[in-house]
Image (cartoon, rainbow, N blue to C red; front, top):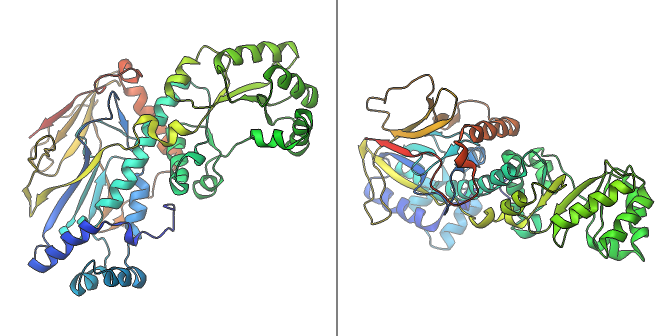
Length: 431
């Protein structure tokens, strides 16, 4: 998995080692270079993105090593020759990294991460940097849209069965930063300290001879504050049985199928008539931000989201790229059609109204004269590594959650719409 302590040595890509070998052979490997991570555009129709995975990237860079096993594999497969193998054996990143903090908003062209070092040191990091940032940013951005749609009601992350086992853990982390209340993934709870929650599936009810026996067993084991799944057979009968077994103090019922809006209304009326006025209603089953928004007027107390969360709700990657923008202090840029890049290292700031509403993202070259700043402007990039060493202690997940909330509050109101539209604020480039 990609959590703390995982091996990262061969998360690089074959073509990166091909470039490394060529650069070592012709003497260009030690040229000082600047690489930048940015997205040329947001996923179709999205109005903002949120940076996810920054700390995971920094943790990975810190332990990026090529040990004997990895080097033997590269040698036996003929991937690179002795010169490159000798260089990889002592690899330690000793450059500088700056970027947007985790949970920060980003827009097309935002310099999300800046890596400065020799060509050799920086080029081997491309795949691992992009794999983390593209995945976590996609999940975090989708999750934030769901949290906004839920309008304060808690969401449980429960997508582990719909993605790779390692991605499930990091998806839970990204969802929690976005504002999800809990996860069902116990490894995410262990690795990142995220609160966990869950209840029984239909299999538990089917295991027993009847629904009452299943509910009784669950209440006996977990107490009356548990959540009973009431739609295995008939929801009306299921709710009646649940209250008969647990009493009106039952914590919650879950509905996992059917027209959950209509069923939630009926369930609320039934629960109230049985005296279970404080019993919560949890709904799940192929929910995404649009379904959650459609349920806003219904008596739903919490949502369970799985597949749409771990697949980025239709945008499973953030579309970020890792491009060389400077060599020996000289700007370089790709000119390929529809894949152009802007040369030179960049900084960024966000302009705001006095009220705090964001106006525009300004991307500039920090080595030139900075654009005039006001009290309402905010620099976006912060230093992460200097000489390969961390500049500050990593932020907690709670601090990242607060950054997400502040960012979303700063967006113009139309920026939170779920309908297709342009980015919430424009990106202005100052050459």
